Every structure is written in C-alpha cells, then in structure tokens.
Amino acid sequence: MSESFVHLHVHSDFTLSKGASKVSALVKRAAALKLPALALTDEGNMFGAYDFSKSASGSGVQPIIGTKLWFGIGGKHKLGSVLLLAQNAKGYANVCNLLSLSHRPREGSHGGEGVIPAEALEGDLEGVFCLTGGRDGVLWRLLKEDRRRDAEDMLGWLRFAFSDRLYVELCRFGDESQEEVDVERQLLDMAFGAPEIEDRNGVRLGTVPVVGTTEVWYATEDKHDAYEILRAVESKGGVTIQDEKVVPSSSRRFHMRSAEEMKALFPDVPEAYENALALPRRCSFMVKGRDPILPPFQTEGGRTEAEELRAQSWEGLAMRLEKNRVPEERHEEYRQRLEFELGIIESMKFPGYFLIVSDFIKWAKAQGIPVGPGRGSGAGSLVAYSLQITDLDPIPFGLLFERFLNPERVSMPDFDIDFCQDRREEVIAYVRKKYGTEYVSLIATFGEIKSKTAVKDVGRVSRSDDFGGYGFGELDQITKLMSMEGPTPKPLMDSYNDPANPEFKARIESESKYRVLFQNALKVEGLYRNQGSHAAGVVIGGQPLHELVPVGWDTEKQMPVCQFNMKGA
Image (cartoon, rainbow, N blue to C red):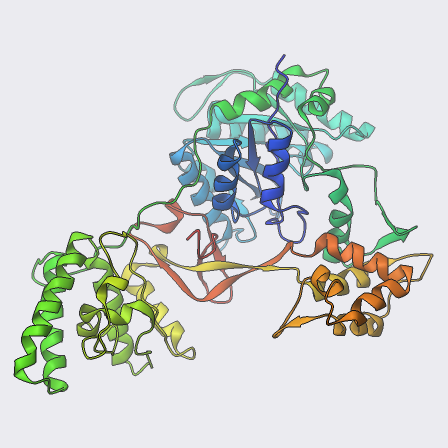
C-alpha cells in the first residue's frame, strides 16, 4: 500500500471567520509532509484558488481546485454539503458555473450563500468530481436523521449526475462516537452495495468508490486555539482560559495530518486511503494567468476595430485642434504622433480596449457625470486625448507615449479613470446594459482581522476562573495604547516592540491576564474576516465571466462579483 496521501477536504481562512490558517501555511505544511497534492475546498467560494495554484505549484505540490457547496432540497435551506473538485479546464468552468448559480438569487427557489438547487445538477458536469461531504455531508445528514431511503435515492441521483466521478466520503478524526461509527457503516453499505445503474450518458456503473478524508481547518495542531477563538466569535459564545491556555471545547483536532496518520485512521478500509491518492492522479488543472479576453466592440458600417479606432481618433483629433486653436503649422506634429501611436496600438492588438474605455467615458460626460482629466502614464497618449479618455494634451508637456504602451514591454494598457463617486453606479449600470450582466462584475476585496479587532474579539469571548474576563472599558484602554501608522493601527508585535511607545508593552506585561489576551490575539490577527467589493474595480469579459473565474453576488449592489481580488481578476 502507498505511503503517501492527499488531503481533499481542506479549508483556509478564506472560509471566512472559520478557517484558521492562510493558504500559504497550508501549502507549506503539505510540502513539509511531502504530500504530492492538496485540494482547497473553502465553503461557498473559491476566493483562494488563484493564490493557491501559484503557491502550491511553486512548492512542488499539485493544486486541486474545489469548493464546498450546499444542496437546497425538500424545503430545507441547507440539506447537506458536497465537495466539488475540478478535474480539468472544463471541470473548472463547470464548478465556477455551479458556484455562480449557488450565489445568484433565484425567484421561487433556494439561492445564495453557496446553496445550489437540485436542477443545477441536470446541467453540464463534465470534468467535475463530487465527494459526498464530511460530517455535514448530504448523505451523512440524511442517515443521521434515520432517512436511509432518502439517502439511497440521493446517492442514486448523484451517481446519475456525476457518473464515475462520484466518491462516497469517509471523514475520520480518530475519536469517532458510536453514532458516527453507525452512520459511517451505513455509508459503506450504500457504497459497496449500490445496484448497477446507467448514468446520463448510458454508461453502466457498479459500486461507488469511497475516499478517506479528515476535515482540515488549520495547518498545524498549534493553530487549534485560533480555531476555537474564531468559533466563539462567530457563534457569539465564549472560550475558556485556564493557566494561560485555551481550553478546547472537545478533543477533536482539525490539523493537516501526515500520510502515516491518515493511513492509521483507515486500517479497515484501505481503499479509502488509496483512493485519496488515486483521485488526484485523475486531475490536471490549476488556475493560471490568461491573456485578456475583451468583448467585441460594435463598430459603424462593418469596420474592424482597428478601422473604427482610426476613424474616431482622427475625428477626435480634428475636434481638439480646432477647439484649442492649435496653429496650422503645428498640425503635422500631431498627425505624425497620432499615426505613430495608432501603429503601436494596432500591432499590440489593443484597439478594442481603447474603444471600450472611450465609449463609457464619452457616455458619462454626455450624462453630466464628472470624469477626471486623466492620471498616470495614460496621460501621455494622444490617441487617448483624441478619444476623450483624457483631457490633457501630451505634446505641449513633452509626455511620452512609450511610458504608457511599449511593444518591448507587452502589458495590458491601464488607464487611471476617476468618476464622481456619487454617480459611479450609473456608469457601471451602462456598461452592464451594453455588454450584459454575465460579462461584467465587481472585484472582491478581503478584510483581515486587524490588531485592534483581534484584541477586542479575543477579550470579548474570553472567560476564565482565574481573572473573570475583560471589561469593555478595559479593552478600549488597551487598544488606545497601540501604535498607529496614520489612521491604521500597527500589527500587535510592532506595537509591542515600538521603542516610541513603551506604554503598550508595559500594559501588556503588567498582569498575566493581559499577556494571555495579547498572545491569543496574535493567533487570529491577520486572518480573513469578511469579503466585500472593490469600490471602483470592474471586470468586463468577452465571454460569461462564470466560465472563466468563480463569481459570487453582491447583494447590496445586486450584481456579480469576481471572487478573485484585483491581482487575480
């Protein structure tokens, strides 16, 4: 039997306010354990898929992209979960599509919060692996509720939908209760005793393979305290502190175990251990950077985008020269400069980009929406000036186009555009209407637990017989002593070691209760707490974005939001 293993049920801190380790820490742990691959299955999202792919592949660990989603069936909001893993590029696109469906509100059916409706599994599922979930898995929950017939029907439905890409998940921790043992025994009976059926393509299926997992919520066992604190904050409960240590709520641990430890968890079902290594061998996908995919720009009279750009640029330049009363003897200089820039733009295949940007800026100006005159290297483009993208004539100021766009340094053009924040939403609405809602999205942002928040959160949920917890005023006094960098509090260790601020360190060292508070706050500082949308970042694609990237939904702005941050998007 193989002496290696792959964890397929792994959460990072992108499972917001629950996961207690960064993606980088999980990858580092997998590499240290010499695990050949690792799956990332954060709950209801694939926020970390891009960073995970880069980090894992760079560490010699095969990244497996996935997510944990919920079913909303039978009148229940969350009947149970499944894990979806991308086998290949097609599978990744299909997982992204299911994820998008799980977040988008749908009239008359369940939606949002990572819940997928039953009808979603009637669509294209090629290249998608499905694991039946851990302790909150859809089969596990049905069996726990003594609904064996419903569980068997669900298994049959999943087999029909996913074919030989379905695995019954056996999730173990080493401290199983008798009830958990009984439920797992039923899972095994259902998997090994499954009747022969045909999938949707007419392929005959026999028994269902099982795969062994353990839920990973943090990289190493010493991160369990952070996990307990996050749970307490999220549930508005509390954690007990004794002898300066967090008292665990149970003996169960959720760290990344070694191959030897996982093998020891499945001595009676060796195929579950083996399949955890066999499944990744069927996967061959990671999220990579891609060339821009721009939507086609509608041109006049059947012109190409390059021809349209030339027509609009020459027309715009003539208007600018006349309006600014540029002397006739200088017109040749402008014409040569415009021709030079157009040649580079065409050779680098960016006419569409200039036309798209010019279009929504012209629309905004026509509606009386204030638009900035242009910032950064884009102000050096005469084409941009002619198209009204900028309002700064680059020639009198000697501004160079090459700083903005240079064929020797191929990169996407980047205009810094300022719209009035009070009417910015109107511009976004125009772009959505022009290109389609599925082709336009916001960009995700992620908020970390900052130092002051860490102290207040830990203090609020800590309870102890030794010191009776912390009062609100007490916590407020401590956070006010922390060092600041402008409006932002410095990290805890920076405040503690700040020679210009000895008061904070003195307060921490004044009593053991404050040392406990400080040490526990360090454990959660920097983990992701929440997700939002970039104030001004918008993605426009040449095909539905959910086919390219994971897409969620901004309930406040009622539009899609790309689940990658500005670097990944």
